[in-house]
Image 1: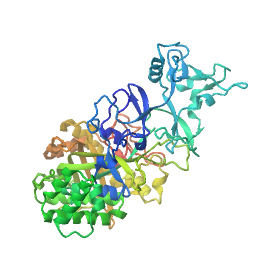
Image 2 (image 1 turned 90 degrees about the vertical axis):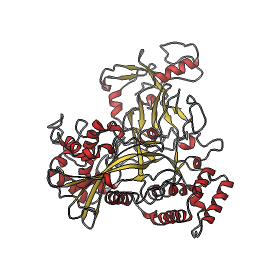
Image 3 (image 1 turned 90 degrees about the horizontal axis):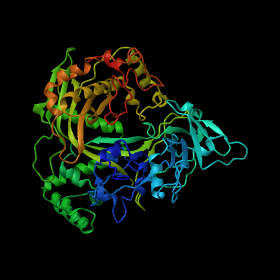
Image 4 (image 1 turned 120 degrees about the vertical axis):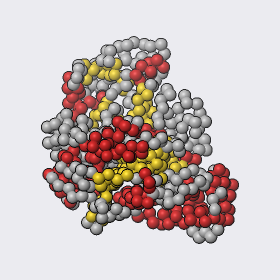
Length: 609
């Protein structure tokens, strides 16, 4: 989607990249444009043409906003070699490592680095400058991004106004050995000192192509490939009954929801509405014909479900959303889902559990682990914004979320980019013999790690003081949540050995909530991909062998190659993990809901399942 044939998968755009991120291409680094600058919605194209429908997600976490997917070259009828998404070259400054010259190429000139001399033409000089793009940029915690102010970085002598290029001397393994020197006056600055300094932020968003508006925050120099330069803010929802059928998905399109009458008594009313929408080119004729093939009772029931959902979800929160998912998963583990199979048009249900395939295992502790295979599931992931967690303010450690959205002219509803994933999963929960069909309270935890997490959970607004805290959910600090999350990472690593999927392809969704002083929890591990065909069953095929996989996951929980340093680490305001590191607990950040935070091997070790 960028440069000379650089491509991105839809899931990469949502989870890792997106507007404001720096993408490395064969044509040099570029910043991905904001949706309004992307050229996706030119030539009569509208976000409705690429709509992803998910009523629960739109009504709750998106505040009524809608979701669109990033169209591919095939969707737009363009060859793969043609870029379809706008990008801008960034940063513009370059560093010739051969001569140690920091320079900025000027268009139409045949010279880039002055020591390299004149090239064949200005295009060659431009290509050379892009290959040598400097590794450093300037960013602040309010999401702004700019070039490093190389001219003002140096303490110039006399009345020197700076130069068109600067000398880059030194190097080796440390930036403290680098000196940046002005060739006009000889003024110099140690880059190691500059790297630790704070600068006035200009307020620039290079993805928007707008004039900088200024910013009160201080900015810092950072490497353009740093993991914390840009972190996507994601909202995710699992499709659950009753909105998991093909008919429900078709009826959730924006055009139908806007035209849906409150009182519907017959199928003929729906048919007339569909015909009007098709006539006005607001609805795809194929979708309309598919809906018409359902019976009157099925259509009226589905419409009633959607109207009820619209009314009920306006005040819902992320916590409530996940609680509903957990209850649907628990119910499916008890009774299966759906209650009856259907071969109606539009594809199968996207929440499917065969009750006869549910397994229970009695663990060494006497506890019962229930393992429920989901042969079909649908997950919608939406990027609502991004952050740049580059804190320079101790009193305000949380970075500001920069929205990622497209707002059509004269419309109040915004559209966020998202991706629709289909696949399979395994749901895990602990049940008791006393409540085999109910939701069981998590067993009592103990130990020093448990006490630390519980203290933070019970502290008023304690989570707001924790640096790098993902989100603002106090429930994330509950020891039961951390316990399930830590177990999740170990299971993902163990599953990757036998499932045929890499650990980066297996994702997690951790569920905990407290009701009537009873805390319950569970875990969904799933793999999914774009396209309605989903995956091939490599994950759910391991359900009968899950006891062995659990033992494998816990086999070396008491050991880490970084011990004793790792095991002695404690959770606190300056550290959002307990005992956890890349050697024992961390997995791919695309697999982890919380970017490898809220983990504690010590808590799991003191409370084995």
